[in-house]
Image 1: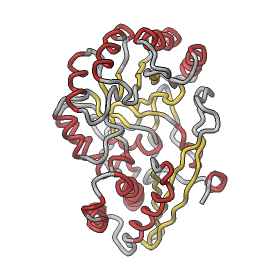
Image 2: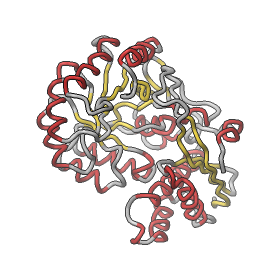
Image 3: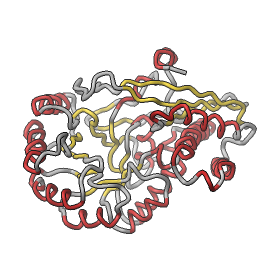
Image 4: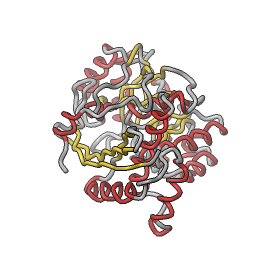
Length: 365
């Protein structure tokens, strides 16, 4: 089998809140680059990438240019293709940035092809540890909401059957620690004691803030505190982790596999969060998951649940999938949620087919 063609496009996806209908910012859009890799066997693999921001056009160009180098290659030899693309980019390109984002889209599509070629869903091909995985509602309980909005959104999520959900601290306006704590208690009071509640800081605290506020909310019973300070302050993260009883999650802002080694060796986190696009695709994602397993650490995902559920289900240390369904509109059908779990598909590959009407409505180039 040989790769014969690649097709890319830029889409603008609304960042609305389909789970609780409580968007923080109405009309906000996320630019996404989609990819299709076609083969002479009639098998097509799909992938996507983002985080390009104002450079999304440059990201698409990078996918096109790297993708052109895969023509006539065997799509089943994924490591060989990754090696070729790294060599072509050269050492001056660096280990992260646009190159890694573009590589991720190609790598994802190649794994989709590989699983389709052997007629297996990706999660089974990669290990098949379980056929359903816990998932948590994300993107509804954002820091920009009022207390009443946050409480209403939280109750809506419970009514929809979610037993895990994530809120945020590091509120706008540099509030006092007491205000931060008060807000997270509003959400806890709205959902009761039995719902697993995570809290994301998005790197906005200094280590001493994280320790101070983290200790004040320990009785709230958070399932984890996420990205409590800048992602590459491994010693600062380790100091926070050692000071708090609440588990610390982190890793979504980490690029490639090597920084994860430093993060894990420093005991910076209790829960390793891997972003499929920033890490370099499925090939690299699995390597980080194996590294985490060697240190007896669970792994969680960051956004794009339609892709990530395969990976969390495949590995023995997968914990839960972030359900932030911004991309759900792109596909004809996505996996259902039953009693707080995503049910894995049995169709070959990722089990995803682009919805042509949706692509047309979101396409900008």
